[in-house]
Length: 178
Image 1 (cartoon, helix red, strand yellow):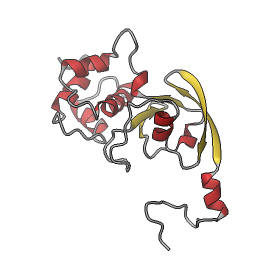
Image 2: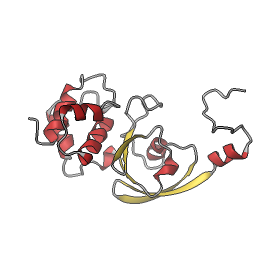
Image 3: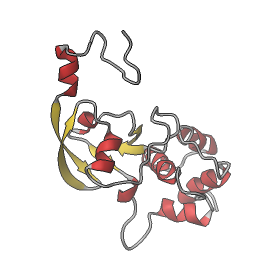
């Protein structure tokens, strides 16, 4: 029997203890944009759903729901992940950064500033994911090459800019571009 629109655990069938364990509630504690937070989530809740529904952080968006567009990108322990695929239960004990945690009330993050200066923001739908993918790259490699920047943002789709302004903005944030 097929279960449309649903991914089941290997060997799990509706009513089985394995599937019920998957649906059980989990308590997670993690650091979100510098603040300790906690939440109760089901085993099937995604990080994206948790961030948007429980914490009202709507910068990350569900574009495709299958990890291909990057609109849902968040950082977990400094690594860019697709929030639409990353299970909320895996956030326990982790450090999570969303676009709302980049920059501050008083000033933009240098990366945000360069995105503005280089016209790397058009409709804005992909921008949070692009910023966080770039942030993850720069945390790991403060002086990336053009090719490394392209690889870092390759999981983020943008229909508006053609990527050139985005690459230039990221390089400018390193002090390498203009």
